[in-house]
Each structure stands twice: as C-alpha cells, then as structure tokens.
Amino acid sequence: MKITKDINPNIFRGYDIRGVVDVDINEDISYTIGRAFASKIRRMGKNKCVIGHDNRLSSPSLSKALLQGLLESGLDVIDLGLTTTPMYYFACLYFKIDCGIMITASHNPKDENGFKFAFQNYLNAKGEEIQEFYQEVISCDFLSGSGKVENRTVKKEYFDTLFHQISFGNNKRKVIFDPGNGTTSILLKDLMEHLPLECYAINAESDGSFPNHHPDPSIESNLEQLKAKVLELKADCGIAFDGDGDRVGVIDEKGNFIPIDYYMIIIIRDLIEKVTNKTFLYDVKCSKSLEDEIKKLGGIPYCYRTGNSYTRAKVQELDLAFGGELSGHVYFRDKFIGFDSGIYAGIRLLEILSNTSKPLSSLLDGINRYYSSPEMKYHSPDDIKNTVIAKIRKYCEDKNYSINTIDGIRVTFSDGWALVRVSNTGPNITARYEATTKERLEEIKQEFETLIAKYNQ
Image (cartoon, rainbow, N blue to C red):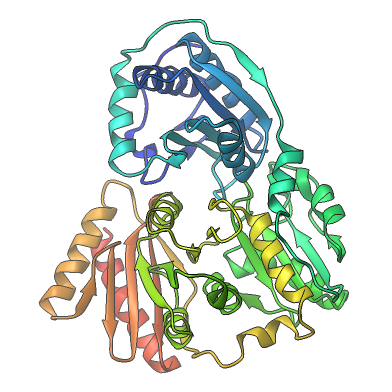
C-alpha cells in the first residue's frame, strides 16, 4: 500500500465518501484514508476505533487496506469484518467507542463503494466535516505507530437489543423478507428464528453483485419480486432491506408498495399516545399526507433536510421519539437507541400487525391522499449540479414563489409542491412533485423538468 494524493475530491460528498471502485476508490486511497482518519482521531486524544464492511465484492480488499492504514498510524482497531451498518452503529455504542468507519456504498450500484465515518459522538460526519477531512487526507500529514487489531462480533448482543421491549400479540402474521442479496442476508436466519411469525424469504443469499435486483427498497420497481411473492403466498406483508441494512421498504397484503412517509404514519398513529414529546421529524421529500396526519393526531410536524447523517443527528438533538426520511432511514428512540436499522423498522411494523387483526392496508384508512411522483433522478455532473439548483432558485424568486431552501428548493403552491435538490450520494439532481389532482401534478412536474433540462448543460 502507498499513500496517494491522486484522489477525486467529488467522492467526498455530503454524508460520506462514495465513488466507483477502481476509478474513484482503490486500495491505495482506502489505505490513505485510514492513515488520515487514524491521525485525526489520535490528535483528538483517542486511541481506538471500530470498523466493518458490507458484502460488496470490493469491500474485503478495501477493508484490508483501510485497516493497514489505521494500524500504521498507531490506532487500535476493533474489526467487525462483514457486518451491516446498523450492527456497526450498535458495536460503537456497545464498546463505548464513538468513532469508526463502515465500508459501504449503501444502496448505490454494485460497482461503487465508500466510507461512512464518525469522529465523535457516535454520529456520522457530514457537510463541512467531510470537506475538512478531505483537506487532511490530501495533506498527507500523518502520524506513525503500530496499532493493534481485535476481531469481534456483537450479533447476540445486537439481537437482544433489537427485541428488547418488543411485545408481539397473538396474531401470527405471515411475512416475506427480501434482503436483496445485501448484507442483511447474513442475519436473516437469526431474525426469522426470533420472530413468532410465519416467515419466508427471497433473494436471501449474500451476494455483493446483487444479481436479482438493485438493493434500494425505496424504489418500487426494485420490489416486484417481493410483491409477487406476497400475493402468491397470501402474506400479510413484505419487508425489504437495502445493501447495508440501514433502510427498509414495505409491501402490503395486496401487493401494493407503501412509501416510507406512509409507513411513518402507521408508526406515529401507534406511537403518539405513548410518548411525551409529540414532535415528529420528516425530510423535505415526504408527502403532505404525513404533515397532515401528524397535525390531525395532535402532534407537531418538523420538516428537515434530507440525509441520514443530518436527520439522525437532529432527532437526537431534539430528543424525539421517532423520525425518518423518504429514502427508508427511520429512527426510534422510544424503546430503541436511535440509529437507523432496517431490521428494527421491520420488527416495529410486525409488532403492530401482531397486535391487530386488521390488514396492513387498512392501517392507512382516513389519511389525506395526494397525487405524488416517486423521487426522480436526473443525471447532472458534480461540477455543475449546484449551479443548476442556484439558477432554479433564481427562477423561483423571480416568480415570487413560496420557497423553503433548507435542502435545495421546495416550492409550495396552494395545490401542491415541488422539490428540486442536489443529490449528495451521486452526480444527480433529485426531485419530487405532489398535487391535489393528476393534472396539476403533471403541470408542476413539467415546469420543473423543463428548468432542469434548460440549466443542466
């Protein structure tokens, strides 16, 4: 391994480091990041961190290089090896080590990889912290030393925590799991053995090439196999996970996709009378249905920027019982410890179902419904995408639109809204649109797609 300064600055994104393997990220870059991280942590007065990696085909070699860099800069390491991101979060808490690195590209394509990392307070670095770390990486001002490595597992302790205070009812529901061949596959057998339910699984073999579908459960088209299996077996629900296990996707008994903002409504309906703090956080991509329902239930809606590094930290800062975002990251702090775990999110839904005879679809009865687009992605090179958003903001200001700029541009109309923002995980602009009628939805969508196409050149 050798130290390198030849690193694409664009892989240092809003929430993590992420890029294409052997183009943006290789073993030398992983080693260099390890040297920089260890040097920073030691200068902060710490001597140990936790690392783990997902099941992507490139993850073992990148992890080996990272570990070498950490050790050669004198940091002791607890190495979890192959693990999910939530189990990595748990291990940091369990060992009382508030810093570490998880090698994963989450739900990104199989040829990508990256690093989620925490310097302090068990919270992932974000924003300016990541840009400052980039400068520390390319400075190559690294400490030297001889760290020690300890290989550990926390699977038993993790499952004990997942099922702590969970009270299943007498309705033995039938559930289908789809880990999408992602890292949660390695825990699926244990999960199903813990559940007093009738459990089945598809795409359950750990395979970092993701041969059956893209490992992003927030996109409905990725869950067609799960829908079909739910209908075939007449299951009560289907639950999917992403590549590293920190996000969840849900299918109801009719084979319909339940977006996470609707999943959050189900959870909040169950939770609101059991908690003191009745403020619930959601991100700018969520449907107005969620805001409406929180208000109807007597709660306080809190709209915040997208990105699990931000939303998780804000839920903790505000001492909220629950919050989440449309991409599938949700955070329980009523009887869990606040990090995003796809498995735990699934358990909480199954707990609700086991305590009622109602079908899953009926748990959304009575909500205000709007016509919504899915989250849309438009390719935009990293070097121009911020300029595109700036031009769209100027357009909206010139039109005297009502705008929220906490994360990109969210424009609110009397009969709908549009959100256009920079993706922090790839060279894209993302958008979502919602309106009271199909016709108005199409009008809003066309207006902003025209702007994106005009400025994205």
